[in-house]
Picture 1 (cartoon, rainbow, N blue to C red):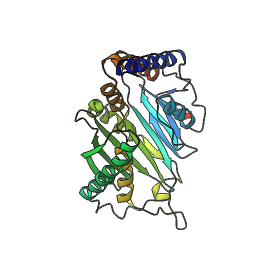
Picture 2 (picture 1 turned 180 degrees about the vertical axis):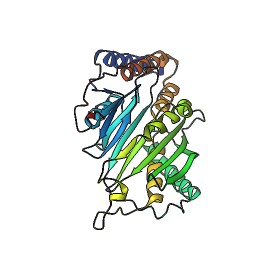
Picture 3 (picture 1 turned 120 degrees about the horizontal axis):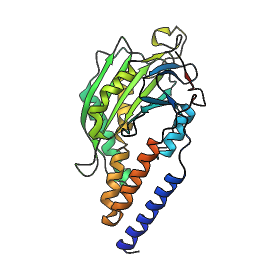
Picture 4 (picture 1 turned 90 degrees about the horizontal axis):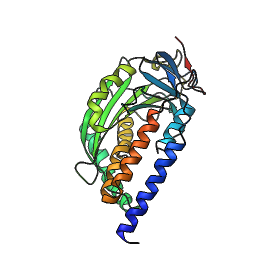
Length: 295
């Protein structure tokens, strides 16, 4: 097939994708703020202010599938602005690995962690190339890892880029440590909007709390303890984040590879996805263990 024919075929496929998005509106049950929502099965709570919507675990897995992200099965909720003009979301997942001891809180070596993540990412580029994918390179910390011993929250943000310097991504991650494991809070947004979105995310996280009996301080002798500490938690999470260029960067890579004839199709697909994200159906419940509860 010639390059021109291939481009036309890709454009046709994209047009079909847009049509499918338009015809099959996602049936996500959103709960509108202000309210207090439950994350997981009596695991944690988070305040959802006015102007935001929430979906529980089952609905979040639907949402992930509809945005082209394979669910992990660990999702316990997602929050996003109700304003259709804003397309970021905050994803919550729970990993029951046991209590992560914070003995390393004063010995987090950000430089050593970055070098480890960088080496692992470069090594995995060989496998990406074998699979037909592009290379990913870790460029540095957007925000160095830091731990709050009072809230038991661990925060970091790592920067990565694709083969082109303009193909950049920032992954902002928070780990909320509890008695039996941790909740990951991951901000998914266009890198160009990150600085503007962060204050809203930080406000949301200030309204998070584990339920009584599930807090870090509720740990008792005999409870499970994780086999690793803060350093490994950061290195593993940052390495996984670096492996994802992000949805917006992925669209950019397709655009670069597809040629001029598929530009219109990509723009239309992007508009269709924004429409899908914007069609936030508000419901009085979330339909699963993440059901919203009134204060």
